[in-house]
Image 1: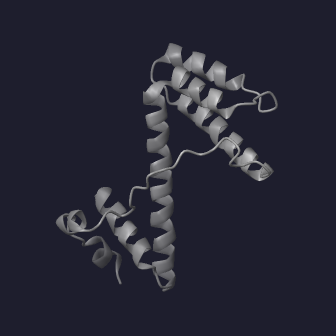
Image 2 (image 1 turned 120 degrees about the vertical axis):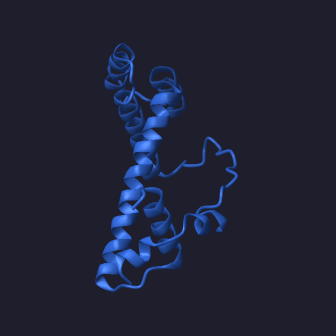
Amino acid sequence: MSEEEIVNVEQEELEQEEPILEPVQAEPVPDDAVAGCPQCDVVNMMAVLGLAKTSCQLVEDPAQRDECIAWSDALDPELIDDLGNVAEGIVEHAGIAGISKYSEVLNETMHTAVIGFVQRKLDAGVPVHDDEMKLYKHLLVRRGV
């Protein structure tokens, strides 16, 4: 299948299809959900610190950005005992706009990864799962390719 054939997907057809990913109603996570999982603790710490650092870099107002970066630079993983407090600090220092921009950057990064992953499979003649192809086409149309 050529790239032109893949890209030649009607926008209306995509809009009529079922959502790519179904929303999931998240259940509250108990405080002890990762008890006994040291790797989970490390991953959660890295995720929160990454969100703090990146969100602060994306703040538009220079004074607020500088203050936010100083705050995030002062975070010491060895001294953090409550990631919830750090998350609240992100909201306080980066604001909703900073967090939203982080989400946009992360989404674009993942979209680029999906497009590249599927394209390499297509180029190699490797079968592509229906869900992968559906998302691939959706992302190409969304990007106007």
